[in-house]
Length: 137
Length: 257
Image 1 (cartoon, rainbow over the protein chains, first blue to last red):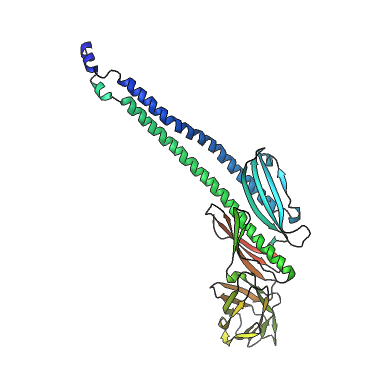
Image 2 (cartoon, rainbow over the protein chains, first blue to last red; image 1 turned 180 degrees about the vertical axis):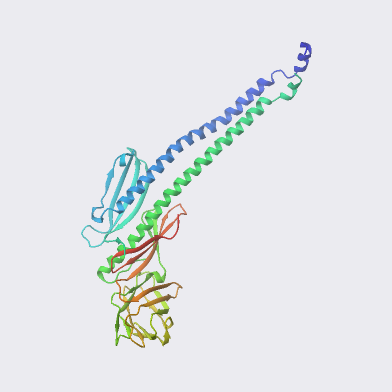
């Protein structure tokens, strides 16, 4: 193509790419702000879900252990870095019926799990345990 | 260069397409994470409510045993809060609550009568009633009469199985009391026979058990459902407690998580 022909063809198109590019940058800029916020939230939530899952497993494990402790020996206890995990487990036991010297008694067992050294409770489970309740025929 | 005319806006279109793809990808990740979160939350609630259901069972057994120290044992039905967010619901059918003490069952009066059965309502929350008894045994004798609470509630002449519609409904009220089944009168000796009774309650539920030979059995059944506020998920555990042995003889979950 000869140069005069090219100039004629491009007449009126000069600057289009620049305008498009600027518009694109603006659109991407507008979109990028919420997307980046969303992404950071996702990353945080992935870590949070891992915490919650582990905490739930540890709480469940401690509840099962508590169920197998003889009634009179079932007392409050705290376990920093429970089983080597970076979670603190707190078992709170209190009488809600009867007492240590009564023939029948009912204890509430509450298990709470927090991140090691943290203050936010990730999981909290409850159950009751009654004196003299045995299983089997 | 004649294609330049058709390339107007190509950069913009390409970038918009890119943004759309990026948005779809982010949306996909979001959906995945939200689902994962909801699954984890559901699992946590599922564990929490089954623990609450078991708390309910222990609560029922504790109160039964506690009252049994003074007179006859009983427990209350209904919803019980553990705290503001956690609770359990204790339920039972009339048949579940009917306790039949078979430990003293014996043959009396010429070995023709089954005597010394006692029945009891396990709750103080509601009365329970039965109006039919289906009695089965394994010989050719006939059943002639049934006496409960010192009154004849059925008479006739039936071979096994005897389907006996009682002339009066037997009601066990909310007082912690036991009631005697005075006698099941047969027309001959019942030695060596196994006698079973199915009690048909007025609420449609039924309880069948072997009443002779005597056995260390005086059972009730209770269903406990764990609940967590803000969640529709519940789990129900059913247990059978034998008041004579002090043991939960059967426990199983009756609703799946």
